[in-house]
Image (cartoon, rainbow, N blue to C red; front, side):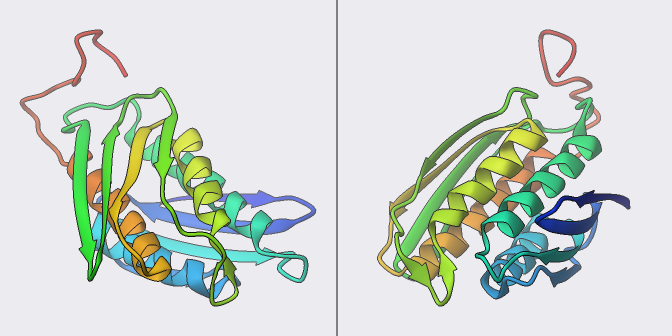
Length: 190
């Protein structure tokens, strides 16, 4: 288990991560919908994740959501690089009722995000525009190449949850141990 704390004028966050865990989650972000998404992410990635966040949610949820993504992404980076004996590539199409979201990723050490989800407005009190902020923070700090694309969907909650689950399953597949691969790059390093 590795841990990291980030303290700013806007947030005080501690995240612990075991990348090869069992999907155990403990979330206390101060943002209810994000807790729900992160619990689902933990379960389907099989990563053990604990997050404590005190943020300026009296203003809005933006700083908490983005900063949690920054810390979680940096811990994922610490856990996977240099990539050795891992599959490296992962993909998943996740269905939630009428919604289907695809995630394809590469443990590339070159951050890039393609984000094509349609939800706008709110899910409960949660601003859906923060979903992209979260994914961008995770991807840039984990140094992953990730494409998250909505294939279909109408219900905002379903589309967003399918996105979190698709990233989780794609990451689980990409980080799967495979001793035969060695370093999964013709360059010799990632």
